[in-house]
Length: 79
Image (spheres, one colour):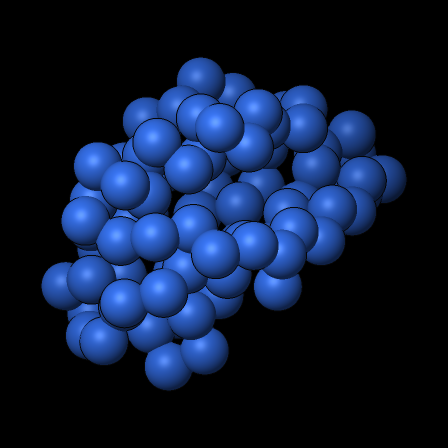
């Protein structure tokens, strides 16, 4: 995962997720991750397998992994 702290105090992290192949997959992953407390925005891209998450503070990777698992995909590591 790549983590960057923005000037406004938000944190941007990029995760690699396997198994996404379409817009529905992107929506499922984005929807589950967006339910994690502190998440401001999520952008999943099926063609690259990357999920970019902007949050108020760094997220617990296990919480992100659980959300991705709940959506039916696998968090495979940093992007």
